Image 1 (cartoon, protein in one colour):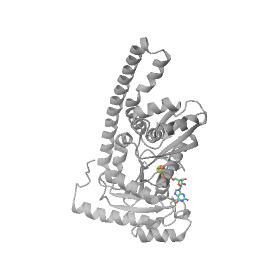
Image 2 (cartoon, helix red, strand yellow):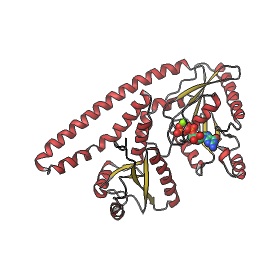
Image 3 (spheres, helix red, strand yellow):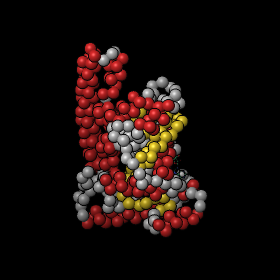
Image 4 (cartoon, protein in one colour):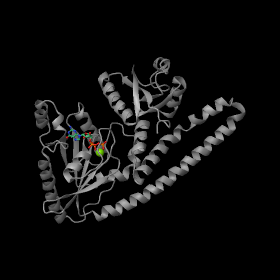
Length: 377
Ligand SMILES: Nc1nc2c(ncn2[C@@H]2O[C@H](COP(=O)(O)OP(=O)(O)OP(=O)(O)O)[C@@H](O)[C@H]2O)c(=O)[nH]1
Ligand SMILES: [Mg+2]
């Protein structure tokens, strides 16, 4: 989607270190941005980091840095900023650098668009993309105006832009009503599942959620060592303590700065998490920044109103953690967590037992309090 031709596009990444912030944090963010670029099929060839008191309202990174990047514009086809740019900033930067400029949100939207398979996911992504695009539409027509010499053609250019905006708004309203219909179907399905114990697998992208679903339920959900392999809520079943059905729901991964348009339009998918009776929060124990990722997921869950939701913290990929001391340390820090390898099948029974015990407790509660499985978003 980034490129209609089949050539691999080359990108330069840009990050900013604000006064008082630690430079390595920006480096880590750019590492993650690089993984995102890789997932989008873009090759990263350059990185630029700028230190500033605060972002420049016009060019975000300041004129000097923009010149430095522009001087190297023969090496790359597009520039990806780790931070969100306003539509005006993006346009100004494109003008000055002479290459296409996108931000982290734009890149994530692009990846979601490539990966969306189901009708629901495609509708959700297109809606988020158009909402992101709408305020950025102006730039497209300015180039035409300039080529045509401006003056006499200004009118038609503007008219075209208005037509374009109208079309986009019309499409947004059509997609929103399609989504409402899909959400209604989902809510009917959910009502049918009201008396079934539901477990949602949540966590940072690439933590191993789908691998865990596959291991627990002997299924074959799509797994890949790239970001956002899963976009749809995949549901599988597991046998409970009395051979009753437990539903396991694999969900879309979280990441730092998930674009808010995307979160809004993925509401119905994320709602699977909201209505779950238990969350399995999967953390990649072998990731150098697992504690930041853990905090990020907690924050997103809190934003979804799930601070108090029953959950089991699951440290995955322990087969890949090099030092035993590190695992011991994690066990001290997170006494309640389970330490597993979903890929190698290590300590899965311990986790299954924990799920079944929670299911038992839930059944007792349900008996005591009927009609309690209604949550509002
Ligand atoms: N070494 C090791 N690798 C694992 C383990 N669990 C998962 N992986 C690998 O981690 C990568 C990501 O796994 P997924 O199951 O797709 O992760 P996910 O959390 O579903 O990712 P998204 O759907 O992209 O958010 C794959 O290459 C898996 O093979 C594990 O226990 N050990
Ligand atoms: Mg997955």
